[in-house]
Amino acid sequence: MSVQEETVWQGDVEKLRGLVSDRALSGETMVLNMGPQHPSTHGVLRLLLELDGEDIVSCIPDIGFLHTGIEKNMEAKRYEQSITMTDRMDYLNPLGNNLAYCLAMEKLIELDVPPRAQVIRVLLAELTRINSHLVWLGTHALDIGAMSVFLYCFREREKILDIFEMVSGQRMMSTYFRPGGLWRDVPEEFEPAVRDFIDYFPAKVDDYEKLLSNNPIWLDRTQGIGFISAEDAIALGCTGPTLRGSGVNWDIRKALPYSGYEQFDFEVPLGVHGDVYDRYIIRIEEMRQSLRIVEQAIDNLPGGLFRSNNRKYVPPPRAELGHSMEAVIHHFKLWTEGFRPPKGEVYVRVESPRGELGCFLASDGSPRPWRVRFRTPSFVHLSALPHMAKGHLIADLVGIIGSVDIVLGDCDR
Amino acid sequence: MTKLDPVEALQAAFGDAIEDVSTFRGDTTVVVSAAKIADIGRYCLQSEGLEYNLLSDVTGIDYYPQEPRFAVAYHLYSLPHNRSLRLKVYLPGDDPVVPSVTPVWPTANWFEREIYDLLGVTFTDHPDLRRILMPEGWDGHPLRKDYPLGYETVQFSFNFDEVDRHKPYAKE
Picture (cartoon, each protein chain N blue to C red):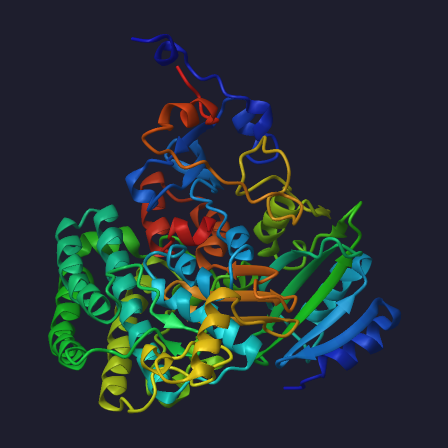
């Protein structure tokens, strides 16, 4: 055994003063480290737990292990170059991140998006939501002890990733949305693939419900756990399923529609108890509602342009370069310098699978953004975690972390 | 339910503390005096007809080399009235200090820690102002414009060892 392994870390208890209760300083309660390599922390989350037996007295999240400086990097790149980086923030919701960033750019430069692109954006954003919820359900069930659900969820997720690969060439980091529309039009096989998925998926959601919703162990582990009241949820900034689990009817797709969500007919599922079980039921129901939106979108897919024709912001297609001098000029300008938005600051919000995803964009009139800021739901929900975890058993903490659906890439950026 | 115009209500209640009002692309920005931000926040949250109960985001901006150098923008949203508002304060470059709004909206806690960490803006009355994303002993504030982006030299086969010698990681 090496010297390092033999040395017991004494810890600097004084550093914890103010963070944990005074009982920890006298040694009456135990301070325990959970993570950052713990499998049920969904990435690299470290929690400092103060425990009285098995009860959590206080919980202090420690984040930043996945901080990659995306916001700083974006300031050094042209507007369009940084879309690829948004995929890598919330890696379960890449297209939703693209959408937030593109909507912010479009708001800044007042660029219109053709209807076909709008509908395809909504369709893919909803498929991304199902994809994200599937990963969430699989890992959440795995954390609590239901192993088989994980495999079923990932089987269905593969089908969605196949559709993403079909349209963009990439399974996860698709970077498919661009300012003014889409990177390219969807291929011919897109529509049959989506229709296959619409036929295939509803029975699978019913299967998950059969496995979990009335399962006594599942109910014991989720009901009455991780309670948060509606007032506390709003005060702590919770959004998305975490807020709706407490019965607050606020969905950005309904309240402040973007990308033409007002044309779609869907319901917003609401919880009553604000516990882990209600958040689970909401996400299951959201998958069904998302599929409804996908179905409406594929039935009413308009023809026409897939990207705006405004050549000041959108590069011309390759075919135009051969015969139009103007197209060559635009192409050259856009790929060497980029576009110059007016000076100003905008903030847009979209409903990510986790909650409110906000993008704040400050422009100084140059081709590079002055400041890009992403308000990410995982960051806010983690700050609310100590409130939800207090008083529960350490075994339930795993379920609570799962129920707020955090992605550490989204949290640390 | 009564619905007040936020700009008129703020101007009537705070007068000179409201320094500027502007609208860009449908977003209303109210620039307020930094010392008053906590009071104005509490007014926006509590007064009937405004009720900005959800603090969506707090973010800091570095306008280097302009002066005042820093700004903190608060994105408020009102669930009962379904509308949003941006409050903004400007802070001097040599001593960026602003009262914390964490006592008003608890969700500001981590947002303010992040601004403190990445931009070096200090929030008075904050319950737990520590670094959040960067390591505890980090030098400098990465999102400041005078903080270099940094890069790593690419290692090719011909200079692998030479570049490796300069790399700042712990060796044997």
